Image 1 (cartoon, helix red, strand yellow):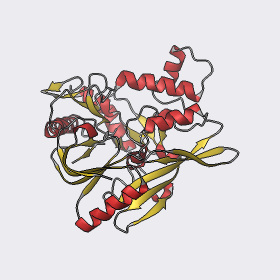
Image 2 (cartoon, helix red, strand yellow; image 1 turned 45 degrees about the vertical axis):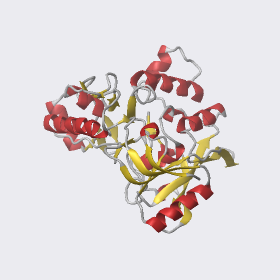
Image 3 (cartoon, helix red, strand yellow; image 1 turned 90 degrees about the vertical axis):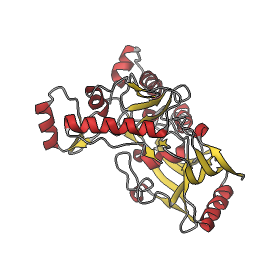
Length: 337
């Protein structure tokens, strides 16, 4: 493990924001992780772990240590009649994990295709798309406890999962570093096709025999048409979460805004944040090099040289506008540093 000083983080965040880390290291093994966090404990220094850098916005230099976990490996731990259990190193690219599962005929995560970032960051946000969330397939998470200086395992019930939320994002932030996770996948996949445009796109493509491979292909097509490639146009995916309101609040909103789309989430109702942002006139708008994507208003984009503060100022402007027009508070999905 090599620790570097005053390193630009521009190549390590998908927004392409050029800030510096006081210290930086790439961690390739459990020994690297143990050594890195042992040193942190001695120095009492703030730290940040980056996966693919796809869910962060830097607004200033990071006056601490930044680590990128690069550990690799996908191992079948065990299987039974119905399920297979995969252990996945934190440094694996998430979409590579999805492809591996689909190629082997194991279902459960095909709807999560093309989500950027690494496997180790997926439990932090409880990533989700097209009617599936990570918690639906997670069996366990292994973490390094930086405070107690030991490794421990979390089962799903311990993770306090919510909508784009977990113990790792909230009270465990700065304490638990995910080193690997175990997924429980189906040998006889149960397809989930009733969310978004999946069925319509399958019909348009003339797909008769719907397999998990076909679902993955369609979702990649849908996402590619809506979301910009971070390697071409700086972005962090969805910047905002879809707001969730009570049934009573939803009734008020639909009386005032009859065209407002929505869908049930348990006893509450989820409102598409993209629709709210578009109604406020931000879709496709550009302010210098900071802008809102032309196809997906939930996505803020860096056209080249926007600073993190400029991106954040645009986000705050959108939040203020949506609150004024609809009385709904948008929450940021991206972590701000």
